[in-house]
Image 1 (cartoon, rainbow, N blue to C red):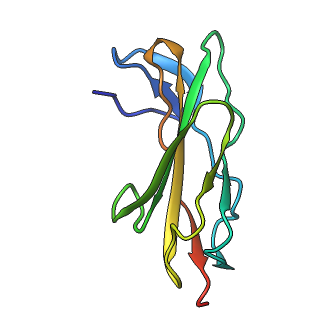
Image 2 (image 1 turned 90 degrees about the vertical axis):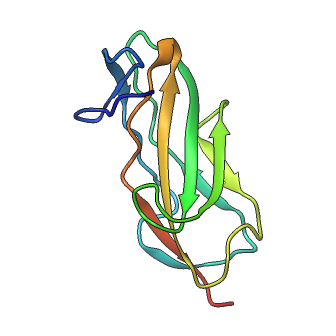
Length: 124
């Protein structure tokens, strides 16, 4: 079981303070509305920062409520970069979604989940 992070730094499963900074969502911009569901959304995490720890992957979640609540609409793990496309028609019309991301590093290090970033799909 992973321990919660402190001050934006990850902890490994043994509880030793890690070196992975908490990422953030860059695109789509927080609070944007009117996004089309027929166009795949590009989610981007901030640059991975580590000192002596190798990047392993980035976890992405798109949910219908903040803080990891609500319905998990889409989840992905990106292993070769910091972007992932939400497939077209995955999202519902006129719905607000919340995105969060976290990094995984070597030796069991994992960052805290990012702050939620929200977006709303269009009516049509």
